Length: 212
Image 1 (cartoon, rainbow, N blue to C red):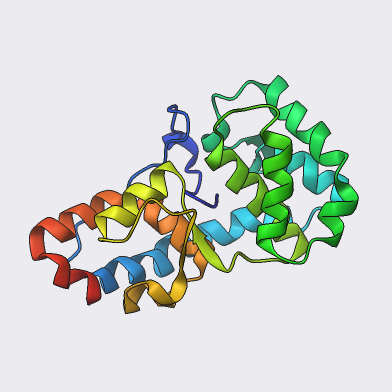
Image 2: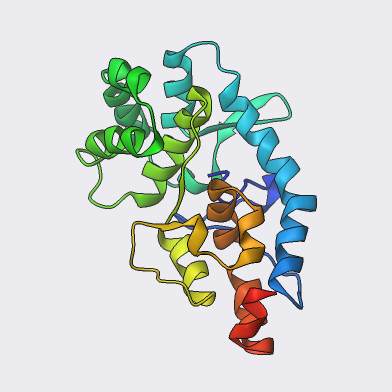
């Protein structure tokens, strides 16, 4: 969620889509530095919207309905742009019934299991929405993912780096050293938004570029 940070007028109309970055880089370390300098501040501003909700019910509402704040107004996040409001409302209602479980969850995996349980009754395949909703709730709860969770966009980014894309998540310690400067949820965002940059880097310099 911040997984591919929303970008206002650059709204992605494709379901589950992430706006790919277009810059040219010479090393993986440059991509990470660009993320820290240019994307992290915007991503953290987005996360602060969920962190500051006044109660769990309100956190569930903005998380399930995919709300983001833009110029003081709420709008739907790009990732869930094409999902009918009625289906997101079903997700909200289902999560409202799980408030005790959400409140007692101690880690990201436990929160995701709750979201998956509710979402599986609404969609057959909703990896991105499940991750995004869980991350929003986790931000409110003060919980961070310990691993880099994969969905369609992040899998593509992982494969461009020569990392396995067929797993539910990747461990931070298994990443190339430059990537370990970022938190797992930041890498989830980076894998999605920078997959084209990864591809250009791989084609330009070979696999050795990924370690620099």
